[in-house]
Length: 227
Ligand SMILES: O=C[C@H](O)[C@H](O)[C@H](O)COP(=O)(O)O
Image (cartoon, rainbow, N blue to C red; front, side, top):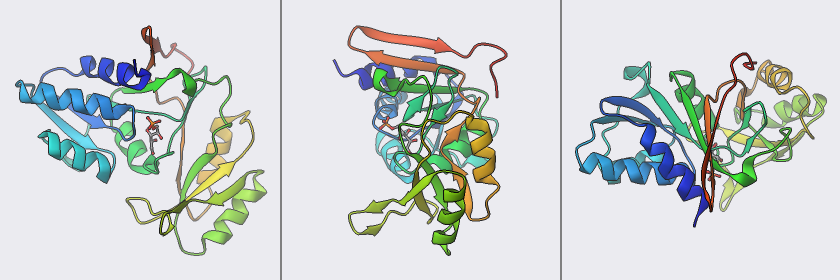
């Protein structure tokens, strides 16, 4: 069976009546949202906060009531996918370009639950190029500053030209090698004018559900490991 589906559907069990829930983006949390759509039809009271226009459209099609983030804080829970998950439960996100809204919504949530298949687990982050959202103005200058931090940025392209985020920005996919100190790199990147945010989610995930054909495994953040 599809490991993403197993993890995604399992996460829907964490949603209880009356909750306000951040709805993540991607092919794993897609299964969570489908499940939640079914449960809403059966009477579940839920307010969703979408992390992308794609997710907004999906939730609307399924009849999940949505509320703007500004009116929803604090959220009870956010459920989202990840591109890499380290042993410390630090994450790389943004493979689908939704990292900024995902981070805004997760930071406004009491709890962040990540769903993924086994392929996303790594000892150390960095094999997956780190997505960094940048303002389009003189993006080449921002890319050069990122290069000076030891990363190799590449402008993300779409079928027709440059990939644009939901916020109208560009994504630089940055090969930074294996990242020894994710919190330090995140801080240095965020200090650069022109950088909107990075796909590094440090100390944010509380629970990770890993799907596999034999079932789902749940990993909880150990107390005291927050960055
Ligand atoms: O921008 C996209 C998000 O960070 C996704 O949650 C991430 O790329 C994982 O997506 P998927 O579940 O499709 O692998």
